[in-house]
Image (cartoon, rainbow, N blue to C red; front, side):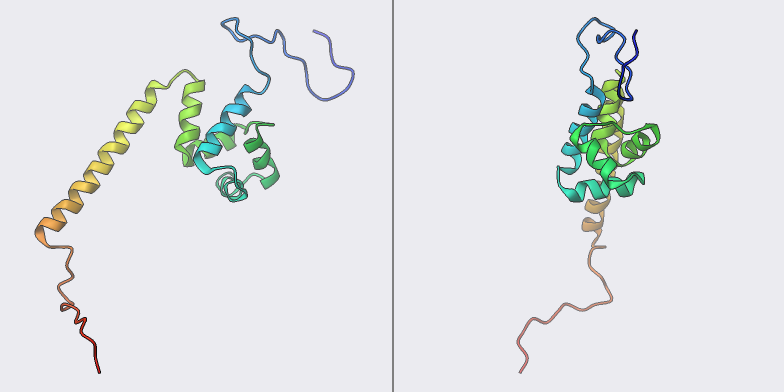
Length: 141
């Protein structure tokens, strides 16, 4: 491997993935960018939200959204903590997409529990506040 005359990046060793397929230079950054866009859209507000989640500079976050660079380890963990899209993409890239089934199942169980609690409250009449009488909607003179 020869060193570049200019710049601060080393050339790829062979340019291929383990299975022999051509590996894009920015595949990691591209995948994270697409997950961020699906999760938050491409707006400036999305970049501000991600910056608040990670503590990264807003310009850095905009580079993540553009796919120029990918987040570092700490930032990736913060993104996965807040965005299911990023977590899912990370698991797919790691070849562990089967773990997403468990996460989705846990989220579904929680949603069902919340729904059952709301239905039970409706059935028992807990949704009506007993301290207030029915509101009189007649016009007053």
